[in-house]
Length: 276
Ligand SMILES: C[S@@+](CC[C@H](N)C(=O)[O-])C[C@H]1O[C@@H](n2cnc3c(N)ncnc32)[C@H](O)[C@@H]1O
Figure: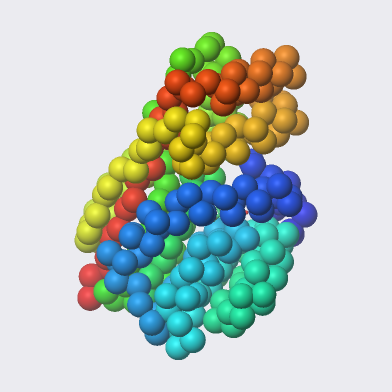
C-alpha cells in the first residue's frame, strides 16, 4: 500500500476532476481500438483480468462487461481519488465484478498465476522501472495467459501542422518532465526485447497513429491534453508561463483553422502470451 497523497502528487499528469473527465473522453476515442485488441486477445466471459494503472476505470467497466458475472476485473492504481471514481462508476453501472487495489505498481504484491489477461494502457510509460512491472505481470499470468498493452512507441511523431517553434518547446518540456520522473515516453520500443527475455510469445505489434483535422472526433484527444498540460508543466517547473501563454494561443489558432493537420503520437498495441 502506498500513501495516497504522496502517490497522487508524484504522478506527472496529476489527479483531479478535470483529469477524470479527460480520461473518459480519451477512453471513448480509443475504445474501439481497445475492444479490438481485447477481442484478438480472446478476452471472454469467466476470465480474471488485471487492469494495471486502471485510473477511474473506463476500461475496467468494459472489461467487466466482457468477462461477465462469472469473471472478475482487478483494478490497481496508486491514486485513491481515481479508485473512488472507479468504485462510484461501477456502482451506478451495476457492476459488482470489479475489485480495486490501492497500490503503487512497484509495491504491488504480484499474485502467482492468477490472471487470464493483464491489460495496461498509458501506465508503463510513467514508471521508472517498467521492466520489473513486466516481470510481475508475467508472474501473475496463468500459463497461456495474455498481456495486452497500449503504450507510446514514438511520442515525437506527435505533430500539429502548420507548426510553430513553441510546439517543439512544449514537446521538449513534456519529454523533460517524463525524464525527470525517470520514465520513458517511448516504453513500447523496449517490449519485444523484454518479451524475448521473459519467454513470452509475441502475438501482435500494431502501431496506432491517427491523422486528424479539427472536425474529426479523434482531434479532441490530444487537444484535451494540450489544454490541460501547460499549466501542469508550469506548476512542475518545466515550462515558463510566457511559453505556456504562447502555446495556448498556438493551440487556439490550430483549432480554429480547418486546414490544420494533427498526427497523434504513435501508440503500439502489443500482445504477448505466457507459454503453457
Ligand atoms: C494516463 S492514466 C491511464 C489510466 C487508464 N489506464 C486508462 O487508460 O484510462 C495513467 C494511470 O496510471 C496510474 N499510475 C501512474 N503511475 C503509477 C504507479 N507507479 N503505480 C500505480 N499507478 C500508477 C495513474 O494514477 C493513472 O491512473
